[in-house]
Length: 101
Image (cartoon, rainbow, N blue to C red):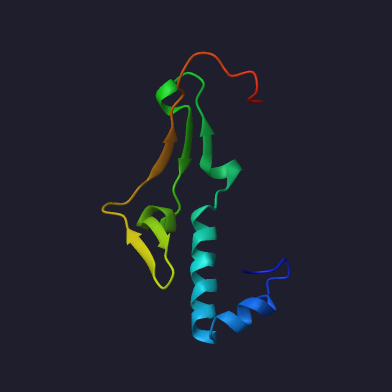
């Protein structure tokens, strides 16, 4: 819904009234911040521990939000039951697939 220049296309302007458009842009900005990561500061590799092969520290927003759901006339933002401090990606298997680089 947002162009490369950060503006709302003409079609969206005609479809959504101003308050709904502003809310949609706000929620999409929130979703973008859920994917935020500082690769140099927050991301760690551990080649010795397969259960904690890749670990990423959670931002305060990632720690508080469990999920975001978009429906036709409804947006649901679920809060996390308890804060998440980090995301862990364990290594599964012993051989890397040849098509993964």
